[in-house]
Image 1 (cartoon, helix red, strand yellow):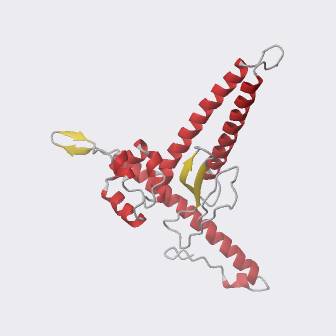
Image 2 (cartoon, one colour):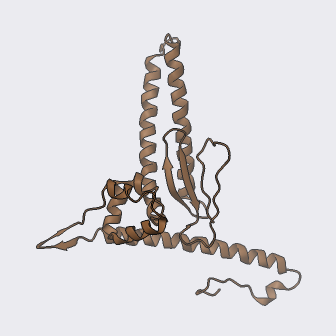
Image 3 (tube, rainbow, N blue to C red):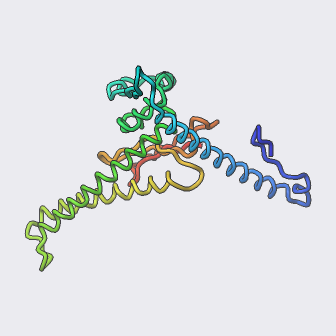
Length: 238
């Protein structure tokens, strides 16, 4: 294997005796797995380095202080700008300011084309956790309401209309929770690595999931289903 070019080759003897196709396929699979692992390692290294950097205070006068992060208005002003210009603006921020933007306004950073994929992924994971917590709270409230309108001894609902609406709302919440859980399982494991580039449980819900990092990909393919899906449409990147 050539470390500089990441080219993988097998010994010449492996291609003899009718093994040309089999050896070629094995080499290709190994090369793809190796590149995926290295990409995951780079992403983890970038995230770790950024976390370390943002926790180093900035000297100011006789004490130490932290630079303020961009406001919601600052981030909203970037929406609609060409991704290249957004990237240039993002790079004018210190790592500390970028981290503050991710933590304080993840719902804005996560959808902002031009922000590095690793940073958008970090922001959207925060949104994913928040949306999941909100839906779980909503589910508990609906389950409590359902118990209130149902006779505990007979199971009969004297307020049938209310019960039907509560059950419908509960089914919707459960569906969204299932969708968020599926997204969480995909981005937290499996190969190749996945990055969350957008997520929202509002209305029918939507999400953008990148397979591998589009910032480092040589080719990018976008897939959007023609018909609405029970789990949100995803953008696949290879």
